[in-house]
Amino acid sequence: MSDEATTIEHPPDGATPAERTYPDARRRARRGQALTVVVDDRGIEAALRLFKRLILKEGLLKDLKRHAHFEKPGDRRRRKQREAIRRLRRQASRTRQRLGERE
Image 1 (cartoon, one colour):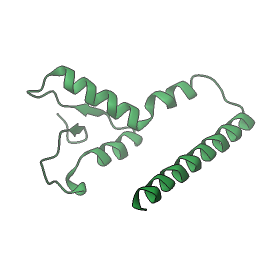
Image 2: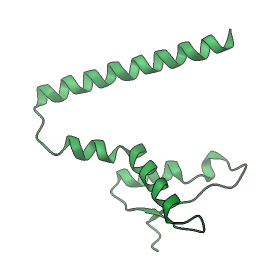
Image 3: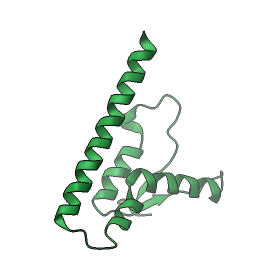
Image 4: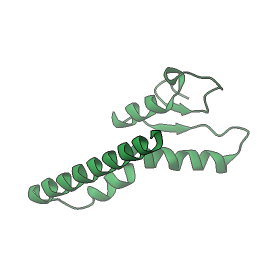
């Protein structure tokens, strides 16, 4: 295995966020680095589930589908606005839920 490949392993109990490899894997994937999932004693099914989860978090499938066809600049602008509105709504909803739980 090369040093550039990103290995995804479960962090030990009590690991600090800096010790986890997940954020590092996301940064490397955006730079075009290969994603690597290690198959250990848990088997290939667990590794496949981990790989699928990583791909979803990265948004690679969404990106591939979006780049399958040309998108006009106006359509792209409208999509970005829709995504921003949706993101703000989700953020506001989560904030309301958190404030509701504290009261």
